[in-house]
Every structure is written in structure tokens, then in C-alpha cells.
Length: 188
Image (cartoon, rainbow, N blue to C red; front, top):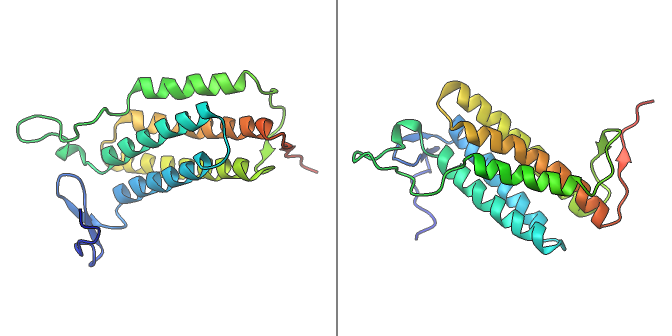
């Protein structure tokens, strides 16, 4: 596979299905931000973490690639002329969202209840989680805007919303695991 094609040298790129759009197109922004999020989750995964969290992050990274492929495919290009799905992958669905919810509940069960908002930080890996959470929220906002203009699979929006919750709770879990301090936000 050749890395450079030169087809994007004029500021356009191709969506899955062949449509050409400007690189600032909202669809490109959406899946580009999901790609950025995926890279940050890789950074979290590369830290010293427990095996279960490591495996969960691999699963999430795979789901984010799926979301990227789904976002890169306009709804009018989802089907081939034969009627078959253009994307021959398992799409984001309720089961993938329920996986995140189950993991959130599992992590939350061992944490002290929150009484205040928490300042991001306390340990490098915790900060990485908060950065990923913020990028996830941006990906969600861009995808919501895209969905106001074009059809977007509703499970993508739900997944991104739940993933930001997962990343927040993961930050709290890793704060606990690393014996770091949670600093509450206190207004004066």
C-alpha cells in the first residue's frame, strides 16, 4: 500500500464510496477527531495499567476505527449497487454501548462517591484520560453537528457520549490505582 497518493494535494479527499470533499468538511472533521481520540487512547494504553483495562482499551480502539469507517461513509454510499453493505464490518450497536456501561459500573463500584467536580490531573496517566475525554466530547459535538446536516447512525452518538463517561471514570479508577490524589473543584 502506497502511503502518499498526491490526490489530497489540492485540499480535497475521498470519502468511502468515492465522493470528493474539502478536507475541512464536517464529515472529515468528525472522523479525524475520532482518529485523534484513538491515538490518545493508545497513549493511555501504553502506560503501566492492569491487563483488563489494557484489553478494554484495545477493544475501544477497534470500535473507534469502526466509527471512523462509518463516519467516512455517507449514507447514500452505504450500500453497493447490489444492495450489499459497502462496509463489511460489525457496526456500532447497542451491545457495544452496553459494554461501556458495564465497565463504567464495574469501575464505579470500587470508587468513593463523588461529592464535587474534580480537577483533571494528579498523575500523568490520569491527565491522559482527561485529555482523551475532552477530545471525545469534541468528536461528539462535531458528530452531532454532522447529524444535524446528514444522516448519522444514532449509535455513534450514543457510543461517543458513553465513551466520554467511561474515560472520566477510568481517570478516577487510575487515580485510585496509582494512589494519586483527587483534587476537588472548590469555588471561593
